Length: 148
Image 1 (cartoon, rainbow, N blue to C red):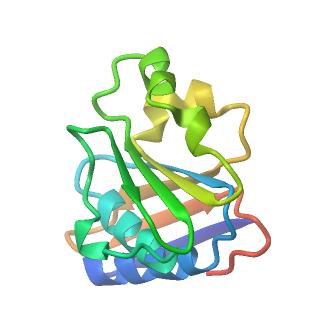
Image 2: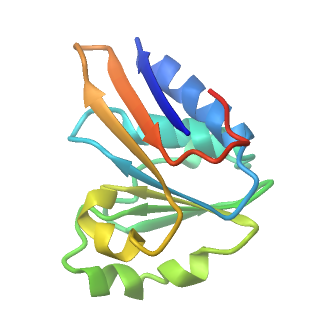
């Protein structure tokens, strides 16, 4: 299944993420792509909230630590591949260990590690600038249980 939605503000992007996150069952990997400022982190804030993260105010881009963990209804692993130097470095972060039935793995800048994700059934999400406040969000390979 595919989704193609345009949001009009960061709040709408977070709300869309919350709707997606609330429908996650566990075991999903979301590969989130887009240039700087397209709202990847806003979408992830919403997904984490919808997936039951205990402290959504702590959801931010893990650019310097590379992985943030959030607890709640599901274990949420938020990986930022922006500073990843190689696919091997990404794998050494523990990617395989993060992928289990009670977790959701959210990967910002996933295009940098697409090679690792080829063998998975991940959901690809691409964000693009439409205008100063609008973002187009296109998701591919959505499971049937997620409706936006």
